[in-house]
Structure formats: C-alpha cells, structure tokens
Image 1 (cartoon, rainbow, N blue to C red):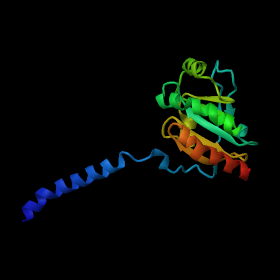
Image 2 (image 1 turned 90 degrees about the vertical axis):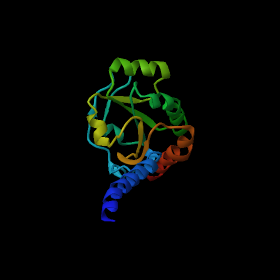
Image 3 (image 1 turned 30 degrees about the horizontal axis):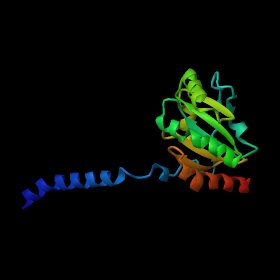
Image 4 (image 1 turned 135 degrees about the vertical axis):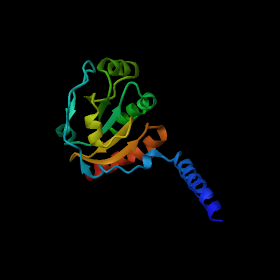
Length: 180
C-alpha cells in the first residue's frame, strides 16, 4: 500500500499543478492590481522621440491637469489595434495624452505614428525600459490615469477596446477630474 502511495503521489501533485495552470491561463490581465495606484508617478525625465514632432516629458509635466499616459511601441501588435481608441479617448475626455515609447527605435516610432496618426501631446523615449519598469509596466500596451496632483489613479493592462474605453477608462478619467 505504501508503495502504491509513493507511486501515485507525484502523479496527483502533477495533475493538481496542471489544473491550476489550466484555470489560470485565461485570467484577465487587467485584474492585476498595480502597486502604483494612489501613489505619485515615479520621478523621471524622458527625451522626446526624435522626429515625432512633440516634446518629451518628465514627472513635473504630469501635474496641473488630469493626464492619460499610454505605454506603446511600434513593434507591438495590440498597440496598433488600440491606436484608434486613443484618438477617441482624447476627443471624448479632453485630457492630455502622453506616450511612453518603450524599447523602440525613433524612426520606427515615427513611421508608426505617421501611418496611424499621432494623438499624443508629448512622447518620451524609453529605449532601455527603465522608466516603464519604474511605472510597474508588465508589457505593452498599458495605460495610466494620473490626476492633476501627479498621482496615478488607474491602470489599464492590455489594449484599449471600445468596451474598456466606455466602461473603464472614461469613468476613471471622470473620477480623477472630480477629485482634482
């Protein structure tokens, strides 16, 4: 009997691990709570993406008005999918839209924006991914709402869709405006 238990125990443990991983695979990444929520935006300075036609930005630029910060890259397929919703967000909310261009070549970013349009008021280049890490970015795209005091109040993980724009992002912007 002991021998049978010793043989079956690893199989039972393996089956349990497979079940845990299987149930976790389809979890919504937006459920990941950011440790940055209700904390000031990290201190940083980002140079402009050369050729993009808008300035870079730093922590000080985030103060004074509600700002949406979108982390994107030209090589990111979901970033391409969400891009029309960024323009819609800007029109619907009237907030400033700043971009962090993560691990990208300036000429690729400029081509990306020339093709899809540039909804950003400012874009900072983050070629080494240092500022993105400080913001707690897991991967692109990610979008943050920053209130007028420079405090991060909301984080959206993954591409913005029509549904997430209406149900999540616009209400988060309105809440940040009310509290500012």
